[in-house]
Image 1 (tube, rainbow, N blue to C red):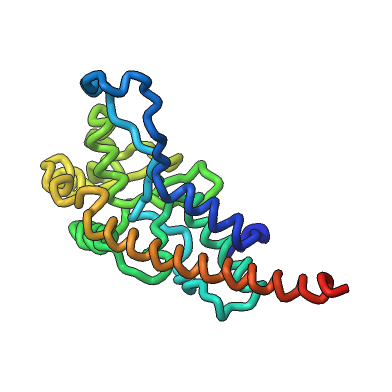
Image 2: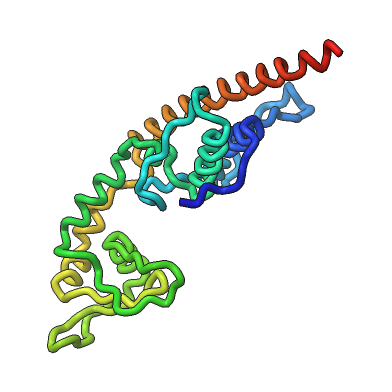
Amino acid sequence: MDHGAHHDPSSSTATMTEQLKRKRSPSHDAAAQAPPAPPPKTAKTSNHLQINYLARQYTEDLPLISGDDTLPNILQLLGEYQGVLDRHESMACNLGARPLGPILIKRFERLFDGPPKVLKSHGKDPANVTWLDVVEFARNKPEQFTLGQMSEGVRVCQFYTKQCRVQISEEDYVLISSGIPQKMIPPQPIVEDEEKELGTLEILEKNLAQICQLADQGLLLLAQPFAAV
């Protein structure tokens, strides 16, 4: 596991707080008594961190940081937490919670007998093509999702996605083409997962604030002998 570089606790807390909360700025409209202008007819944008509740790089859960941890452990955990944020993963999931989204995806994967067959991978990382990837490919590129190529005397569907040459059977092709698997994919994000994420971040932020307070107290104690000189 990549533990990242050392981080100062107070600066890391501020960085993660800025990433996880939406910034708000007061209005500077000089015409205070003028009627409010209608909202612009443009697509809404958000500064919220977009979390992928279905992705997770490491299977091992991270411990929850606390004031009882040693300084090296605190710095190590801060680096790992920052890695979770940089990868847009769920902090709750990495700390041991079980979001509903991945559970539903596992049920969805059981529609198929086994994983998609990767014939060849051109990427640097190990091939990781899921049935969710296949269904999304069929939806986004139907002209490339066709049946007709022969493999060992049977008809198969072959296509290229995620830098991999993938092959699925005729039965899986017919099932995906019916549209039924697509209807079983859970919407993202799931409200329950978002609530669990917010609750986890509140606990984490509280613990980080306590650690910063302990660090400030330690600095004051260290400064007292020098102030008396």
